[in-house]
Amino acid sequence: MENYKGVTQSQKKDGSIYYRSSITIQSKHVSLGSFSDAKTAAQAYNEACAILRENKYTLEDYSSHFALDFSKFVILMNYRNTGIYFKTPIYLQTRFFYYFFSPKKYLIFDREDLFFYANHKIQTRGGYFFICNYGSQYSILSRYGIKSYAKKGIDYIFMNQNDYDFRYENLRVINEYMGVTEITTDTKTEYECKIHIKGNTLVGRYPDKISAAIAYNKAIDTLHNRGVRKQYIKNYISSLSAEQYMERYQDILISSKLEKYEPDRK
Image (tube, rainbow, N blue to C red):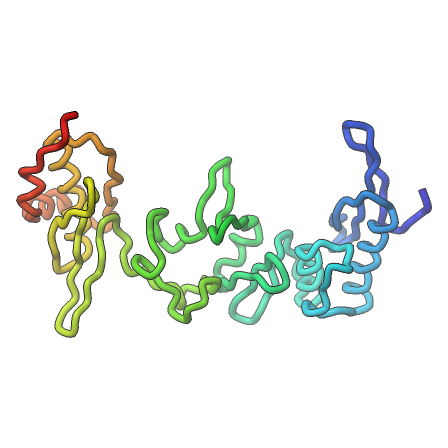
């Protein structure tokens, strides 16, 4: 193999040869990627040197002609401009940061989320953004208290209409509880509770969302007592003690239709 700087030859378990490219940052050897040939691996090293040592390129300069993967390109650009190395494709701004997937696709977060996303890789599938932790997948929306069943435009909204802007001021949670929908008119705001049996069935309307969330739980208990076998997810109300919860639970009224419901016995 021709002696290319920053390139080492390696061998896979099946005996095939590949080439690894790396560069030293903050006394650490940082991988630039694995490549099928030494020349491409050397190109990646030279591109990294051009970014870090020659102060060359901007984010807009990236193209398919680069040997460097785009995520590595972002990591190096951010390190050059801020002096901070992250292992994820984060690009810092004064009060927020970008998390890049491609030159035209990125998420925006507040600086207070920096430590978390510097240590957790975001993955995406069909518009769903998630991280993997201890073998499980977690939606990034869960960090805002948004449940997995929540629907955009009903349970939460992006205030500036940018679905990729996850700054706290931009993400408004409307309904944090299962089965609860905020109903606002010119004169008042109420919280409507519905539960799905064969179709959506009205449980009732309530003055606050916690009452509506408790009503949903009471509807579940009522249906189970009537012989309904469907498994529902109950609402967890962390703001109430067990005694406070039971007191409100007993006082809350739900639709008489649920108390008289007859399940299909077939």
